[in-house]
Image: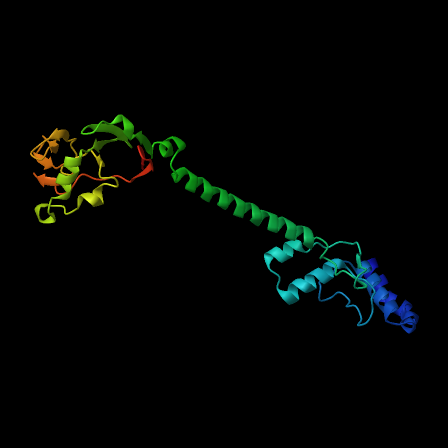
Length: 265
């Protein structure tokens, strides 16, 4: 170590004639002096003269950029010091040392964020699809009924969504009787026209609106439906007339697809 420092102290005296060659030779001499004396701190290393393109250590440039710009941890990871010199032919200058790995670092960071976003999207889709009804449940949501099998004056009971549905093929007299009822006589005020798309056919859910019992068809004081559990009487239009039930029998959503065919639901 003592020998290296002695040589370093003599080198400037020997290299004094080289000062006449210009700043490039001076910078070379300082670099050789640094090599002989060992590693020094950044502040003690010889600085490159202004206007001179002589290349120094890449680590010096990286450390200087970090100190001046206060880079974030992400940008620091993208700084990769290297001994290779790369030249930008488009702008006719060389790349700054330490920026060679930046494109790859950006690619890795962007790819990771894309994967996170895709995983979040997949999780949301899984949750939404799990809340949707299954195919077999959707198939039971509607029911097609052929009305030609119901004779006039008869009632057919079908099962829809686990509930009984009464379909009544009414006679002309029953239709006229239902239309003549005044609204003042009703607890749940509805006209017969509001409850039947076709006056000849009445479609109601066969569940009593009191406590959920199943009424008996063709019974009661009004020859409509009668609930024996607590004595609720419904007329031929399914409207509550006597008893504790507060509302009329529910009319489900249905439509006619043909003259003698309906779809419930």
